[in-house]
Length: 117
Image (cartoon, rainbow, N blue to C red):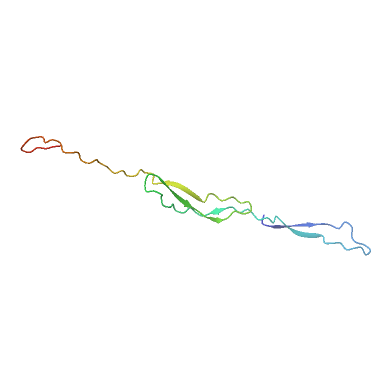
């Protein structure tokens, strides 16, 4: 691939005589393998991961890379250029929730101080 040269030759089997026509050229060069050489795809390094889609409970994020050299002449194809990944997979915080107070119960004593629950 990439271009080269080749040559060929011939010999005189009968030389011209008595005013015969002179012999033509006896060697020549030509081009060969002129197709371009294969060039494999080259990609950049991965970008940093993007922001997660959620702060908790499991989300997704992505990253990408670019082609720095495109494949040519049957070279290796490019790999994937973007990918997604999971992130923030921990469960979300759940705050405590309580009901409203019930009504006061009956006092434990009739007089002199007591408690009620």
